[in-house]
Amino acid sequence: MLNEPKINRAIKLVAKISIDKASQVFSKLIKTGARIEMEDAFLADITSITERVNRENTNVVGAFVDLTGEVNFKFLFHVPIQDSMLLADLMLRREVGTTKEFDVYAASAVQEIGNILASAISGVFSSDFSIDLHPTPPEVVNDYVGTVFQEFLVSAAPERNDILIMESCFHVIKNDIRCHMYLLPLGESEKVLSYIINTM
Image 1 (cartoon, helix red, strand yellow):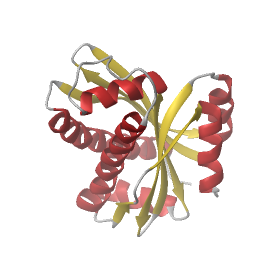
Image 2 (cartoon, helix red, strand yellow; image 1 turned 180 degrees about the horizontal axis):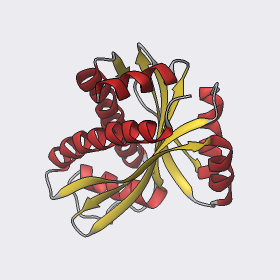
Image 3 (cartoon, one colour; image 1 turned 90 degrees about the horizontal axis):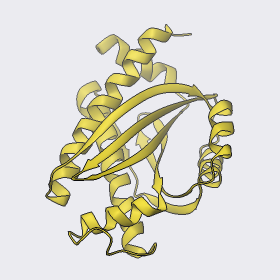
Image 4 (cartoon, one colour; image 1 turned 90 degrees about the vertical axis):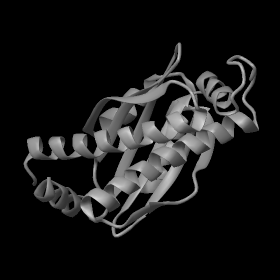
């Protein structure tokens, strides 16, 4: 098994660079003062995270993305349903509060943010660590957080019990949108972590 402190440093580095790149794209997209700030990134036990998520009673909108190439990952980004409406208004550059219910625009906003985040992660693997990786188009889901998370796990069929969690916050003018991202490594995850650690 790899040295745990080294693994933690590696995943925090990948997550930080990815979020910084996504933040630049997001700010240009909505053309206003905005940034995405990483609050934490860590490897966790799927079983304990599943128990925690199932205790929540939040309706969320999520984006599932497959990251494929030399290695494969499953990626999930989700925000509370109210925040998906706020994102829709920001991305359409209209007054916040205009979108009153979840609609195609709110779904598209989450899909686009999921694409930005997944593309940033793929870009970091490709440019900084020379590991070919690219995202597939996001699939948007709307349900209770526990149901969304279970669907994510079923679609991934993980071989190990490790999951990378990135907790971030979108700071947009007077609005803070907290979001969660999950990255499940499939197959050659330990090989990838070793490579990243050796090239840090």
